[in-house]
Image (cartoon, rainbow, N blue to C red; front, side, top):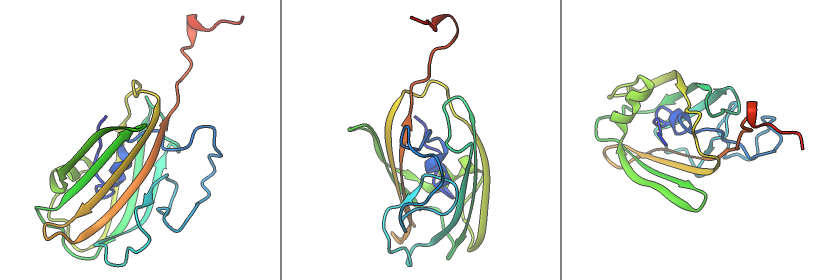
Amino acid sequence: MRFSTLLFALAASVADARNIYRPNSDQSLVKRTDLDVPGQNPLQFCEADREKDIITIEEVILTPNPPEAGQTLRIEATGTVKEDILDGAYVNLDVKYGYIRLIRTTADLCKEIQNVDLHCPIEKGKISIIKEIDLPKEIPPGKYTVEADVYSKDDEHITCLTAVVFFNRKPLGGMFDFDL
């Protein structure tokens, strides 16, 4: 499983992430709490107190919504960077498949944001990204939990996002469909 950065490196925490909705749930885009990231997406902030975060995420839109294995996922994200983000910024990334930890690592933010066509330094001010990602059709069905906690080179908090990702098993179709 590839994790493509966070919305500004994190739209990417979604980015490769896959069908990020609860199976068989109402797919309407009703927001659940003040932790929900604005827009049409399944992202949530890790904590309610975000005033000191270096990035203010204003909106994230995923198309299609929800994303599906084998489809192209379009990510549109906007926000405001409150101070320059320099080389040395990093992401603590945790990815689980069910209860099994797949990844727990620290990644170089400036290297990862290249996946969404950004480069360090990320200058203070408004920022927007649009990125299309081809999701593989072979994504194993199941529940994925992703958390990306992002810090500057000086350990100042940039942002933290989390998502729960479900991939459902698709019918085989064709010659394997039987009416019994």
